[in-house]
Length: 210
Image (tube, rainbow, N blue to C red; front, side, top):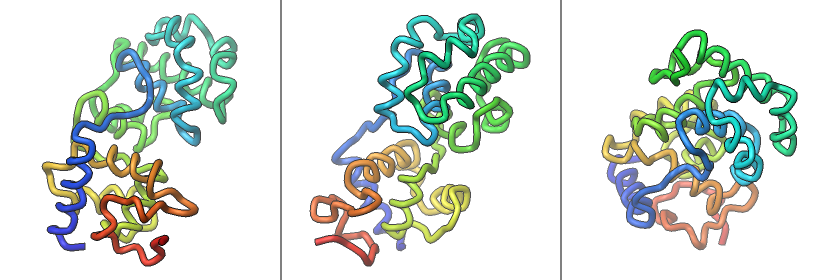
């Protein structure tokens, strides 16, 4: 896709929603990280239903360890893969205290050393907590980017690298939020809502719905 079209797409997203943000609820940098870990293969809505009570009593690595894995599971049992996620959250809390003095590291590499934190999770945290212009690729971003024609890729990491090159610097801060929200509410997986799409005129998807 030509750079002019890419610029028009993101300018249109920006005009509709100038300051997009994560839909996950959190109270500080630690609870944001926990919420992102919990959101893997789960909906933000489902995570947000479970976390207020949890974050009210465990909003730091110390408090999370004091709560313990067994009790943590009771708070997050409505979230998919809650057993492994509870183990990872306790593990990352332990590592934060042991290796980072309880503070969340500010590099992707260090974040990925934490249990349950992959490249996408690290990128989401860096973008939402620190405002870094990184692009986190989830299923929505992967689908929308390839449908629009921003890239032609087969893996999340390849998509991230392609979007890093394709998207103008001025849009990168909010780019993955715009793509996530577009994929969540308009460019949905089974039957995209093309008639109501604000970037339809630049979209290169051949299977547009009427």
